[in-house]
Image (cartoon, rainbow, N blue to C red; front, side, top):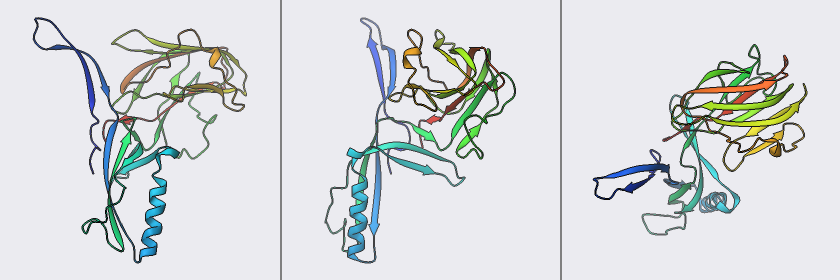
Amino acid sequence: MKGFDAPPFLLHYDEMPALDGANLRHVRAQARELFLPLFLSATDRTTLLNLKRRLLSSFNPSYGAGQIRVTEQDGSSRWIEVYYASGAEGDEGKSQAGVYWCKYGLVLRAFDPFFYAGSSQVVEFTPGALSLKKFFSEPFLGLHLNSSANINGTSEVTITGDVDTWPVWHVQGPGNNLTFKRSVSTGPDLTFSLGISLGPTDAVVIDTRPGRKSVRHKTTGESFWSRLGPNPQLWPIAPGRNQVTITMSDVGAETSVVMLYQPRYISA
């Protein structure tokens, strides 16, 4: 296997006239390529053909991405989304295929170059005690519950992972006029607001993930995108400590804001 460690990085820089070296402007992780060797075998020719045809059909990138999941001996796992690119064209050479077996060297392309944790992380912001009963039923399969934080106050939230990731926010009413702010030491605060009024039975899901960004009522699916404030910054969260402030007026005992995210890693 190849390509399961660090992705390639593109460095943007400016060379300065009459000065040594250059000034780095921006770093960007590029789409990565993974190489996965496969060996197929069967007890008879018909079984091999059926296995091979079913496998090759599932690789068709026209029908969307697949996942490669890497699981270690301790049970921890990370996955990456990939598309088949090449390597399964077939080779009937003596060292590549036989009557009951064949080899492939698959080339897979990951346009999101990072691996994701096998389980999601959850942080709940409430006016009081931690409950998490509004959105998720017991048991919390695939979720790791972190300590609670406060609405209408700044909380320090510690994020695992190697790189920024985009959360999905679940907001349970009652409450009005939400504002989400992340304070960073390297630049201005990142903020977005949502001008809506939620009743005790209303809930909104704010998905900040690139390519999936949306603001919808949890039950009816109604879009509230137009209710976002001017120049909304649906910010990512950085690994390590983050200062997060959530303000919301007219909250009640049932009010909560749940931040759900999947840590992203440079390698498997």
